[in-house]
Amino acid sequence: MERAQEPRWDFYTANKRPIVILYDGWNSSLLNAYLGQYMLEAMGYRVQVVARIDYVLGPEFYSNAVDLEFEILPDEFGSSFNQLTQVDRVAVSLGPLGYNKGVGLYIPKYVLDKNPTWSLDFWRFLLNPSYRSIFPAPGSTPRALVNGGLVCNGMPGLCMNGTYTPKQCQQANSTCIELWHIDPTFSPAIYQRLIDGLQLPVVIKFLGSKDTAKSTCQAAINQKKTVFFYYWTPTLFVAKNQLTNVLFPRSNSTEYAAFTNDNRNVLTSEPQSGILQKLASSRFVNDFPELLSLFTKYQLPDNQINYMLKTAGAGIPSQAVCQWFRANQALWMDWIPPVPKSVVSCPLGMGRYLVGIVFTCVTCPKGTYNWISNSTTECTSCPENFDCPGGSEVHVLEGMWMALPTTVTPVSYICPHQEACCTNNSCPALTCAPQFTGKLCTECLDKSMYLWGGNCYSCNSGGGTSLYLVIFGALLCTLALLALPYEEAPTVELLFFYFQVSRYILKAK
Image (cartoon, rainbow, N blue to C red; front, side, top):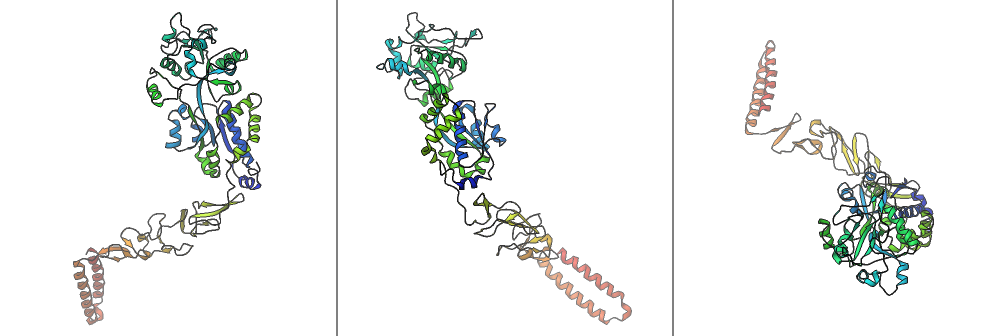
């Protein structure tokens, strides 16, 4: 714990915002939230743990209300998981949690202890009439009712009259046994088709809601009755009651794919387990990049979560996590990343900023820039008459021109023909309007054209003749003017008119 509590971590995290961890309404999710909280607080972060109100995935990430979630089963949320992580990218998967969500059939351990040679932990014991004889027969236990009515009925192939009775158990002299289930919405049709596929002499009795089923099974366990029932993990109920999972053949993915398309297809293998994931918001990834390795490494094996669940059953969940936290320091300390180190200098477009006591390279925000390749300072404020979008970009304003930078300070020039330079609100270096190029945009892009009065004109064959004509005509007029007496002043006006007309002749050519 010493490394996590070093003063350097406390200084580094002092100015960070609180981290929000969301948990769902069951024990294992809450235990993970507490464990995440304790690790982060040991490192000096501030943490808030909040409960999910509605079992819907997404709104908390789109609104940036949550940073971390544990125990997310993608299949339970349909396309929402991929939409969040692959399409909209408002959340990031940090990988598997370690243990999986699974369903199974259970027998109390005390039943196995009474019959140690019967291999009751393997499904084939169900085919032995002697072994089955210790379990209750169908209809020998009280019928389960909900508000005076059957739990389920009128569902051929799933539930009739509160039970599922396969063909092999419909004969009067059958020696089938009773399997307690919750209601048909839990693992729908899986165990009906597994009973059909393996021809098991088992009748499913549906007990009702999750709470009703749990209390019924717990009462039977408390009385040391021989019972055979369905449940799932990870749960406090399974962890605290010393139950044995009955093993079936390894799950067959092809078989379950066919079953998913049509739940009338029989099964002969173990139900598929669900891989539980960890999710972080994109905002968390941006604000706390130093913690990504921690929560990527964060993985709890089955025995560790079951230990915490069992301990929580005897006390308070937060105390159970605290106990595990202190007893397993060697495990979680390997997840803790090293303290971030200060950078010495930063590249172009980034400034060196102090975060806590650690210097970090940060991309220059809008209104600042950095043209120093090994900068040891913060980004420079944008000079007057320039526009700085951020990073290393520096633009000139309309009517200005800038050469490629040769120093760390930008220099701009007023264009002699402003319409030939930057015509937008912001332009990078060397930008000229269309048709112009060169320093200060004083050359025509087309070398066959010449610049005259801020515009580019073509130099065609007619232009040369017109030019000579104008020059020769001007010379003759000048000689004639000199020869005229003073009284012929109106002739001067005609000469000026001639020069004005000649300009338009050139422009037309």
